[in-house]
Image (cartoon, rainbow, N blue to C red; front, side, top):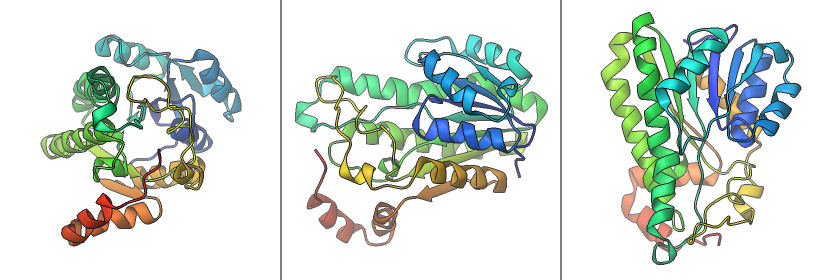
Length: 264
């Protein structure tokens, strides 16, 4: 069990979407927050909407160019040791393999995989020393399903899920907990902000994203899973059922995925 009341929680990608919703929900539950993202003005906006802004510290970070050890020291100077780290920052993709540059693949891996691994690796010694700590990795249903138009994103999220599973097996005796979150379609700017094949912003909200679950509902479900100590949590609609189809009827899953109507 991980109690949120009075816990110090560090959330990356906290300026919008799921990260913002997680921050607002945790603040209502009495947590102390360290919020990170690139856009300080958006972080300030999120802090202003929290019930007690004095319990919210802002730590601007560009997770494609940062020193993880220095970031951890800066985060711990805010309210003391970090009890819960939420690796939420990330970016999606909307492009076919044949249209995608290697630079785009590298950008996706840097932000969606290497950055959360680096932050986790830098924070784990402090958690081990206290024999307590919880790391939440926001993966994606694309971290279980190799969805078309998301080759790089899916690869990074699969890698993140594998890393977390292995870390959990290594560190549970040290009192550390790991929760991997696999959201499906959530009403955020993820598709509009996704990378196109040439590295430009995709700029379009997928109809599946527009019809997804609310970010606030997603955040509430994540915090319930953290409080319960769940190791994995899935949320969404038919896309979650699709993941189960892959597990139990892989041949049928492959047939359906190849013929799926993908958003462009």
